[in-house]
Amino acid sequence: MAPGAAVPRRPVGGDSNGKDGPHMTTFFVGGAQRSGTTLLQGLLCSSEKTNPLIYECFLLQHIVDAYRRGRYNFDEFGPAYFNDIPAFQSFYSRVVGDYLDQTRARYAPAEHLVLKETNLTRVFHDVYDLVRDAKYIISVRDPRDVITSLIEVAEKLPERNVNKWFGGRDMKRLAGYYKGVYRSVLVAPDPTFRKNLLFVKHERLVSNPDDEVARISEFTGFPLSPEDGEAAWKRNEWDFDGMERFKITGWRSELWGKQMSTKNIGKFRGKLTDEELAILAEELSDVYHIFGYGDDDPAQATATFAAPHKATPTAQL
Image 1: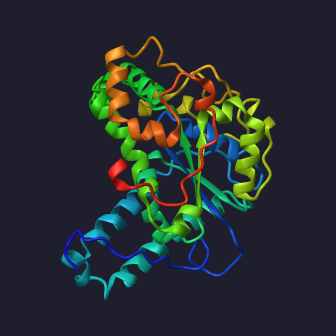
Image 2: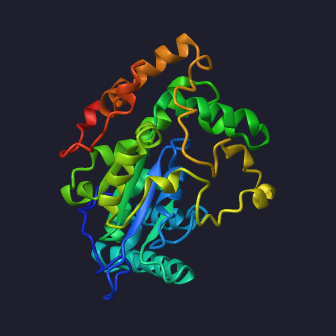
């Protein structure tokens, strides 16, 4: 196999920790930054069957990134340390399993884990290699609102070069970021992986929580109530105020920790120019079509979106 060639996917391990034992599911929350991922995580963590709302799993992201780099370059570096790709994959499955075990023990007696790291969304198909029974709940929000919010964050945090990360008001670069987050899950061909995906439109969740929370609850298998999103977030252990030394408070939304609200639907209006909106419409025409955005009709933005049964053609993305 040539360096960089795709490796056939082979899920390993038994349950989510690679060992025999009670069935416990790990739910990974993903989506673009500013798409409502923390609200979604907070809703899921309102259940007593899960861990409380905790900080993003950055370390797990780095573990999966290391696995991904090694897997795609196995012929060049791997044979010096592993007999073959299955042995390499099994090693990382155990590493990830130990990480999840440690987290689960930390929040015992939680039956399920709910973890979030937006950058993991791009590599959920790699996580699938390592954690057989994980499920993935992906927040989708109007890309125009996401991009507007990213621009606002950049303006709040000039000292952290956030403007550089997302290209300032470079609409093509910002559109590329948005598309890149969702591309891999939309084109993933494995039907078993795809059946473990649930897309949640942010606009529908905050506008029609009864139906959407019921849909999420059916997917997770544990009870959730729309009332869980109608008050301040329950079971929140994310001390955002105490983390000011990390200089991340510019990421904090005015609605952080508060009840669901439709206030920020369509926030791009009056903040993005007609020229910028035209660029986004061109760059994201496929995303608008797949997710149902790009129209000023609120009914379209709040319509139910279900992941296609088959992978979206790569040419569209």
